Length: 88
Image 1 (cartoon, one colour):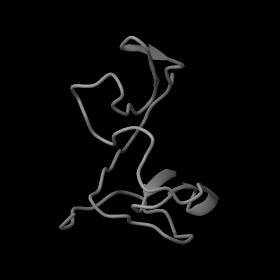
Image 2 (cartoon, one colour; image 1 turned 90 degrees about the vertical axis):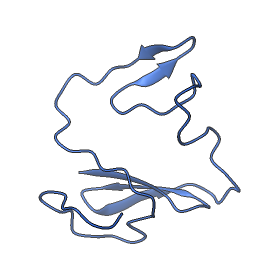
Image 3 (cartoon, one colour; image 1 turned 60 degrees about the vertical axis):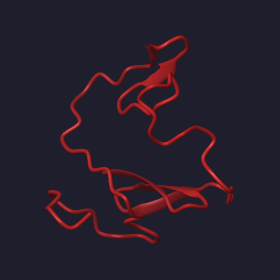
């Protein structure tokens, strides 16, 4: 279970619910979080390669993905078995 969380100030990376690293606070992400009209939008399972290609694609199965409007995790947490529906 991997979780990357942007709380408006820093990006935190959790592995199996345990905080691994938190970036220094910054006023905004280096790249836009969502901009499908740009070659700089984020991908899951590969890195963007300029111009518009993929680099280092993941060769495996990604079972679940959840994108939220709010920062779900700020501290260590028990990873859920399955994601459920909620207001976010």
